[in-house]
Image 1 (cartoon, rainbow, N blue to C red):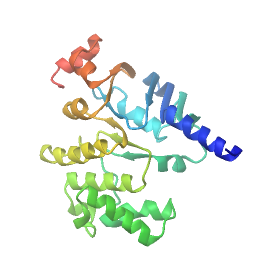
Image 2: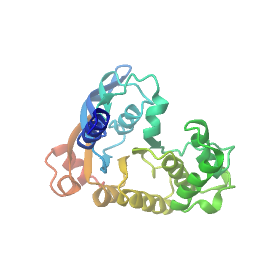
Image 3: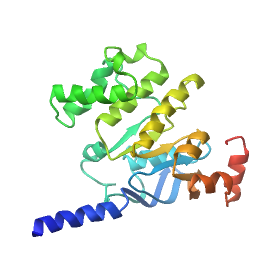
Length: 259
């Protein structure tokens, strides 16, 4: 084996063993309000991790720190072992760690197709034909390939979120973060989005999901993280968290109608 081949093999082995994302002692404050305090957890390849907890517990801020939409005040966010908190090129990092937002964040003046190709052409510098083919692949996956000429204002909330998911998938990231992807939807539209997310999870995609959908967390996740007051109170397999919670705060949260 040549030195180059050995080095490549070593890097691949390290990436296979090393968590994709590792958060260490993460802290974030807004003014005098401590939002996150000493957060530690890991995301391994293929994980579907659901972060649950009451509103204001720090879940969404944690996701925004991981994707660098907020800058942590302390601690580290490691991506394949490299601290990215102070990276000079956050857009390059976000190519690998995509995000689906609660409020869709689509470009209202662009068609569905252009919403899914603009990142490919302007960020990844992919040619128009290849970008279109890739976008159509993922729009078909989410069941929105029949709406490519529509503008977001012509779509339902569930359709908008499926387009947003297709847009994130089209970048072909290693991880996708979901920030309460169903909370802005009418109840009858929640199921269509969760169905797409379930299929994504079954395909082996690495997903980190902030959600109030306890059924999804119980049935689809392989890890559940319960947050309260800006700290991780308890984490484990869904069976452990939902059926045998150890901490009183976890028990109280689940007993409060959040099952």
